[in-house]
Image (tube, helix red, strand yellow):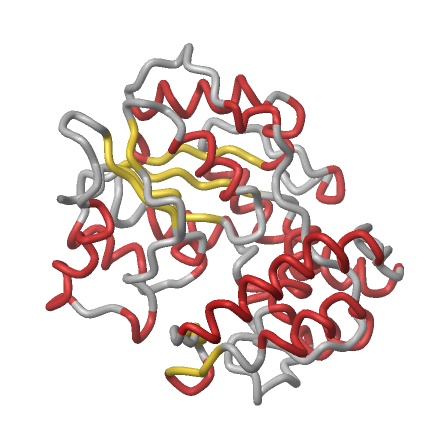
Length: 302
């Protein structure tokens, strides 16, 4: 069974919230997890049956989709998606790229793709290209180049198959935004998901919390493809340890350590603004039917 729509990202921009609201709709089937297949070394055209196995539980008549936020930021993915799913509708969820980069920085520390060091130490190293021993470090920045990535998708998909929303739209008018997506997908827009009143997932911004998490988690994963991906150990003991680590993190460490995003120094903030300025201008020039409400980039239309 081929998917008929894809939530392509962006990473750390609210795509999990969108997944929850879409999968609740009775006319839609989505796996409740990310489906990784089309990016990098994971892609294998001969294994389409393994990809399609994720959708076997769909009922007759349901609209089938999946979420994988890395798809937006990787240049090889639009052509691969167009080859196998040319009629698929695409949903892109965007976020102020500076805030997204900060969230991604902490996410990559949690998932083992970056060392656990303060933002003001590690982010300048990424900007300067110094983290060569961490093969995915550059994604912290490049995954926020939405103008470049969406222009790449529009080479392979017509504009009418693409819908853009922003995390800011979701926070200000969540139900309306989800109704617009229901309309775009051609399902009943009046359905009100229970997840509609929830908040998009918050990142773990405490270095202490991340160190406690990683003290266990690093033992439960194994690197693949030169450290570009991690795979969970699947033996019974590792599964139990993972569930315990998740519970500790949510019930203990999340309550003991702060959740607020760190305040950027003026110097680092300005460097990030400069990094994204031209791409935000390009994004706005694409005129994809969505206001881009990022005050940090005022004047980027001209």
